[in-house]
Every structure is written in structure tokens, then in C-alpha cells.
Length: 338
Image 1 (cartoon, rainbow, N blue to C red):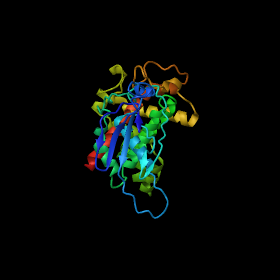
Image 2: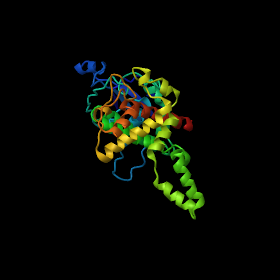
Image 3: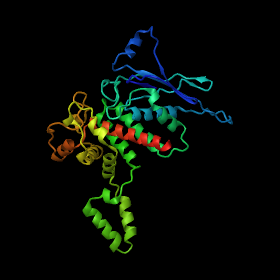
Image 4: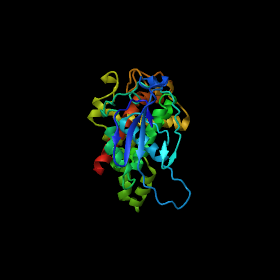
């Protein structure tokens, strides 16, 4: 695996290890890997001791999916892009990993640089993920890990498209938040506004077969944006809001309108996916101010679109929301296992 962030330390356990790998110091490329740059990488070797079943056929088992999932998981945990390059060794066979290194234009930004994410304070130190990695590798059943890994994969994809296709990154982040929200207990009273919920209750209590009709109607009313907004509001806490990464405090997200901002982001996603209407430069990741919210008055002809852009978090803000939610979910899983 590799990361544009400079990881340190090592993690060696009986059944697995994470150790750093380094380029030959005598080569000219070695210096490039020690200075922050678009192509600088730290390399991490993942080793697993796997007891293979007795061979009953010539089929060779592959575990490359596992290394990818570990890369997704650790990306979400640290808030740093970590890429799996495939096998080095499996059993008595040796493999050539895929070492294509794509440049990272935003290498000095929080998802790629060497600094801890401010809200979590987790350093890029491989020994820190001991509990998380052990719980994931040796879980007795998939359970909620499947949901978390699927969300981490969306986060991983969003980081890879952050500079080249910011609108796709925007969509991937919201899709990942949807996946996480599936683990959130939300009542119908919270999902629907007071007036509509009152009508639903009237159907349930006053009509013949009202409960059956209520359940059928409810099953068709997904309210994904509202559910996700409620989930995000529940997960984000004081450390997220106080330890922002924007240049100035007024550029950061605030708890009192976070649900409104998430629903506005969903409006932009719907515009893009269902009508092809992009928000252009407003979706760009900001490497200068790193503002969580849109600053100033967007110059957009469509008044509805203008309102959505003004209320939505920026791509910076959405990435920060998603990573913190992932970190919190991973922490909850680890705590529950312990």
C-alpha cells in the first residue's frame, strides 16, 4: 500500500503486521520520497498469516480484495488517501505489485499531507490502528463492518477524484453518507415534517385497514436526504465544529444549520444526476481558504440553484463531514467489539 501522507512506525502482531518499505537510498528517486511533492509516497507492507484449507482443487485462493478493504478502512480512519497495489508474496508464490503512482495536485491538503486531521488528532502512525485493524481482520461476522467498508470505499474514491472530477467526488461523499445513515435509528416523526406526519397518523388511525395503508405508503417514502441529514447531525459533535480546517472560524460549519446544509447538498446532487446540471467551479476543492461553506454570493442565473449552492457545504466541508462520520463509526465498532 502507499499514501501521499508520510506514515511512521510499525505494527507487528502474531498474525499480521504493518511495516514501512523504503526506496533504495542510492537511487535518485529516493530523495523525492522524503520531500512533500505530487509524487511523494510512503509505502506500507501488510502481512497476514492465513491458514489455507486443505487443497482439494487447483484453484488458487486470492486475498487481494482484503488488502483493498484494509486500504479503504485505513483511509477512512486516518482521513488520508491509502492505495492498495496488490500482492508481493502469497504462500510460496511471489507477485509483482501495480506501482503506478498518479500525481496528487493537492498534496499539501489535509487528506494527503503529513499532519493529523484536526478533529480526530490521529497521526499518520501505523501503530495507532492496532485495535481497529485487529477487530476488522478477525471479526466473527461481517455485521456492520460491511456497511462501514462500503462507505470507506466511497470515501477512498472521492479522494481519488477530488482534483480531477470534483462533482463525482461530491456525489460519492453523499452516497457514502447514505450508506452510513442506514445504521441510524430514525423515527417517522423525525423523518417527516409535522403537518405531513399528522396526515399519516390520521390515515393510520381513522381509515379501515389504516395500519396496512400507512405501512405501504411509508415503504415508498424513502426521505433519504432527511435521514442522512439527521444522521450527520447526530454524529457530529463539538470536536468536529471547534477543530475546523478552514483559514478562519467564520468559514467553518456550525451545528445550528447542519441539517439544512446536508439537504441543500442533496438538492445539488439531484440536479446533477437527474438533469445533468453541474455547479461548475463551485464544486472545486479549495486548497487556499479551505472553507467549509460557500463565501460570498454565487453568481448563478438560476435562483433555485443559487440558493442550493449558498446553503450547501463546499467539497471541503463535505469531505470533512464524511471523514469524521467514518472515524466515529469505526471507533464505535471497535468499542463494541472490546
